[in-house]
Length: 196
Ligand SMILES: [Zn+2]
Ligand SMILES: [Zn+2]
Image (cartoon, rainbow, N blue to C red):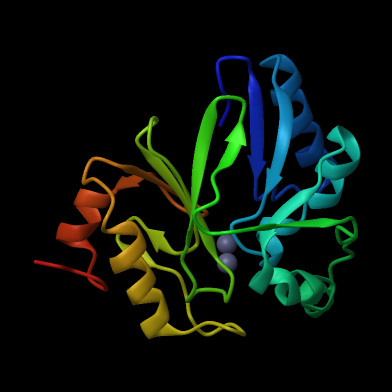
């Protein structure tokens, strides 16, 4: 997302191949954006591949939840099991804390702690924009898997009910995978966490 000054944050850069890095850089340059923040909702491989590239290209420090640090450190080992070469981000970490808004100029993202898919998953709520970026917590018609290390089904359902379903119904949810949805639609239709 970006603000009126074209300052943007990059969340979960999944770029792995050089072509994907070029695509991200071209997009940012063509739009005239200035990346000012690097955030991870959580640190599964497909969400952290591009951390190092973004760090080196725009000199940004990675923000993650403290409980996600071990997952980030595991990433090269996970990559090996997929036979992928992977250069992990090794810079400093800034820990995301609940109730401490993340600022992009005058814009604010509210981090909401939503563990269950991963132990330190966070979702970012932008109240003024009416949207949330939920990582792999809640999907259009589905929820994140809970069989990976640190995952827990009941914790995930509780995160969705207390941290996401408490947002206004019209809030758009951009997930790590799949199409955009809304809180209201998922409350009515999501088979895993149906409220009504
Ligand atoms: Zn994930
Ligand atoms: Zn994912």
